[in-house]
Length: 228
Image 1 (cartoon, rainbow, N blue to C red):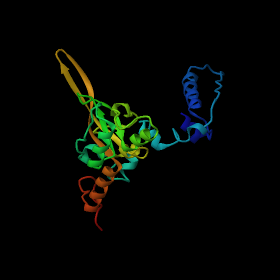
Image 2 (tube, helix red, strand yellow):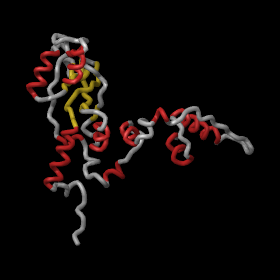
Image 3 (cartoon, helix red, strand yellow):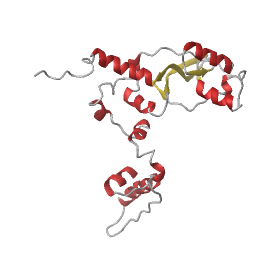
């Protein structure tokens, strides 16, 4: 509603103003002839410049769908993460030390590794960057278990997530974790858990796009233009 007020009325209002107007529009439907409804717009747009004013922010959180518009510009927009054919990633148990994690990432040429429990459930992520910053700040040392250094602020996608949505996620992050839901049964009880099946980065997306375009193998993804 705040975006509508900005575009239609030129009122540079914030999210609280949009919420107030939304409620007022609903309440106004029950007004009797001659009655008026006054709406106070309590905030401005200044604190929302990188939030709902951004189409990318809106798409990433599912508030806006640009698939029809963007798919006409980008042949890959509606393709899914499944198309990238990602490899199953290496994972670490919580007891692995930070030193061992650093050596593993160095040997494998990777920047981040998921931390999982014994059943494969995702607990967090460790990266060379966050390990370095914590070690330099003396928050951890080489012998600290990675469970103490792992962070859980990262984006998740599934194999059915579109590459268009993935691209908006990767605009603000270095990677996204590809997860799948798994049913685990123990006797008469069963639980659903989230397991990691891949890590996708900007490089994976760019490699897929450029390889297909270089090869000219787009006939199955979009209609060929008519010849003259």
